[in-house]
Length: 110
Length: 110
Image 1 (tube, rainbow over the protein chains, first blue to last red):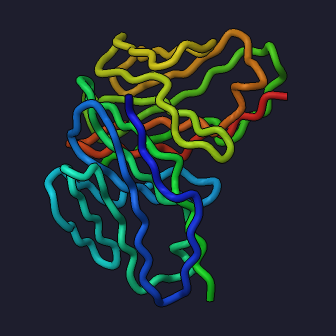
Image 2 (image 1 turned 135 degrees about the horizontal axis):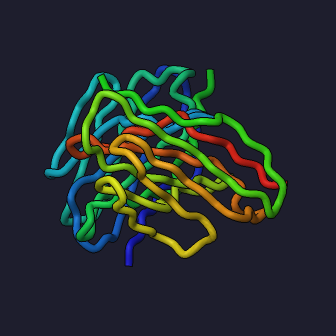
């Protein structure tokens, strides 16, 4: 079967660092994606990992361990505008479809 | 650059009425196209995907259908809407590996 787990909600303080974890079990693996989705809006692409290790992109970094079926998204220097849902998605299977987790709702407080 | 359009942005339809949602992509040729639905508080569910004109794959049994009459046009339809069809409908196209989403259509079936 295919399963993606991430925490439902998290709260963090403006200026701080937060780590959002994602664990997955999929048949086949061709990459892990993180998307940001503000309330009422479409998801926007943040990052892509296909090899083990850390990918850094500005304030956002994403880590992957394929052997552990584990990823995290690290957000530094949090800003109020970072309050959003963060979706973990895995591409796998014979047709390279994306399987999404239910998302982690991050609330950044002053 | 590539852009993806969806319309309408919002829609309120009575149970039993038909549905037609349209998605068009600009700036790319022969894209893979996807229809997702996001119910309130739920993750993204893949409904259909298409790798070319007239080629549609359905992911879940339902009373929805999809068509791709032109290379960059993807249509989601229903002959008779159910209450359970309410949700946020997102069209996406895939680049090298990541998927990019349109602005979405929020459908409320009453």
